[in-house]
Amino acid sequence: VRANTDVATTPFILLTAKSDEESKLIGTEIGADVFLGKPFNDQELGSAVRNLLGLKSREKEVQKLNDYITESVLKRYLPPALIGDILSGELSMDKPAELRDITVLFSDLKGFTKTSEALGAEGISAFLNEYLTVMNEVIFEHGGTIDKFIGDAIMVLFGAPQDMSPQEQVKRAADCAKAMQRAMLGLTNVWKKEGAGHLQMRIGIHHGKAVVGNFGSTQRSDYTAIGPTVNMAARIESASEAGEVFVSEETAKLLGEGMAAEVGTFELKGIEGKTWLYKLN
Image 1 (cartoon, rainbow, N blue to C red):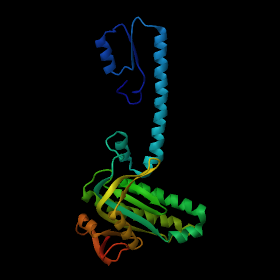
Image 2 (tube, rainbow, N blue to C red; image 1 turned 90 degrees about the vertical axis):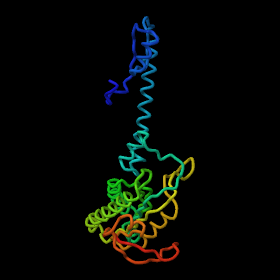
Image 3 (cartoon, rainbow, N blue to C red; image 1 turned 120 degrees about the vertical axis):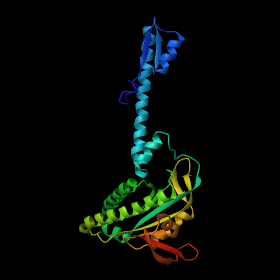
Image 4 (cartoon, helix red, strand yellow; image 1 turned 60 degrees about the vertical axis):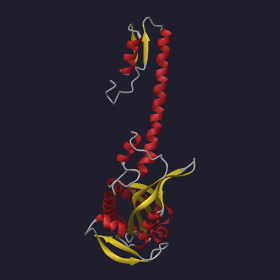
């Protein structure tokens, strides 16, 4: 029974004449919850049954809470594979902030503000939720962690909390960005009837060091990344062309030859000097 995951948590009472210490130890090792030796008191047995049923009831309540947290929180931001690792204890997001190499993807919709004014609150809510749902699925397919939604903007991390080599990070980010642009084309074809078919997505990607961890208070905290790498990714997204994916020179080098074409130098807001940017092929 213990080996069957469907009924493994069924409470067991061993009621036996073998009440020596060795037998009790064996009973505990094979998974018995309570060990009663003969002769037994019927009140003692009844009390054991009531206690086990009470524990089982509380266990179900805890499971419901865990299911709620998984459905309402974790599944919104993390790929299913990561959720499994977290619930099994193989991976933790509740650890001190640390400096690590990550890849950050920023996406944004060009013309969103003007469109939202035209569609009104109800219209833009339905449209935005449809857009974020589609992009959420694409991001999870490529192993990205959604840092946050900021209106129509999305910030995605690769390499945190799950460890990945820099090459794997940028490859996943690039593949994800191209898949997001393809999904966007499908959405705009549907949105033409609703007057939002002109919307286009801009995406920027940068790889570098960032401080990653939980930031906030005891009442509310977020798992996020902060630092120049995040700012650079956001600035690259702002400089990118509509419908395209721009990446930094660091990202282009990690992607390898032929994966990105040089676009030129740009003066990015808040970044000193000129920055070389590349466009994904």
